[in-house]
Image (cartoon, rainbow, N blue to C red; front, side, top):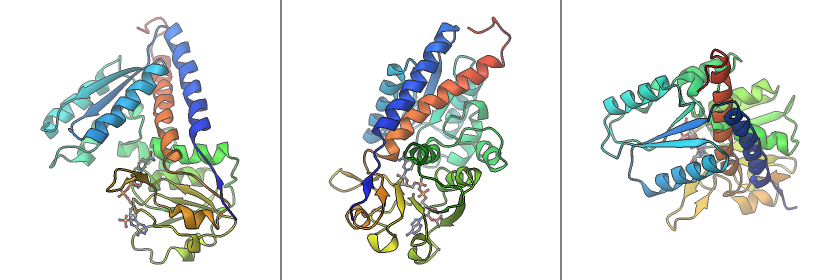
Length: 291
Ligand code: NAP
């Protein structure tokens, strides 16, 4: 058996079209949705990624404001910039791009992204709101997994879903989103021991561990839908997931590719979240006051 590939390209295009239509409607109402991306590194691949966000935003009619503070930015400067952007009415969404300079506390910085502009769900307040089922932006990657499952009509209600990884940016928010869709969720992590005890019986396995080849064919079943969130850069510069694709493909029902899977959808969701934030912020203004 060969697993059916579940590519993200078509879904990403649909989401971008949705963001573009919403941006156009906002512009017609006098509001240009604006995304601010804060960068403080000279890491080439980060700048490449940020440029791809800028290009995608522009193509969707969303203004992208790059705030490049350089690799020596201090925590104090980063906090001031995030506070200013949070208070700036013309900015609707804020992304704080990692990596950040050594010694800077990411946990502290993300608290300075206003929750209503926190389009990548980085502020712990956003995660808390998600946990109690109140409106909040989920991290785009966690939502991308849900959108992939919906797009490919993979049912999760009443099904067993295993999430490998419990980070605040992927595993935990994803587990909350899955619970909201009535899945029975098991979260595995580095102390869970042998994964097959959990993954063999799962209808859906999502792997977000940052460990190339962690999930192998012997750990899944023929009914498993496998979602690979991992993006690992190998020594030769190539990108690989957390799933050992050849062996898992030989057993599982379906598998998302890396590259071209979840990551493709993630960027488009950042755009859609920006337009949603702009819409929300515009509706809280006095009619006619939208600039
Ligand atoms: P992270 O913060 O390093 O968390 C990794 C998680 O995996 C931790 O909970 C860790 O467990 C768990 N883990 C590590 N080794 C394990 C093992 N052998 N067995 C079971 N669990 C294990 O990473 P992250 O930020 O969540 O990212 C995870 C992956 O997703 C990375 O490859 C990252 O590049 C990728 N990612 C992709 C996107 C995208 O758009 N596609 C976006 C964000 C991240 P402990 O908690 O016990 O340490």
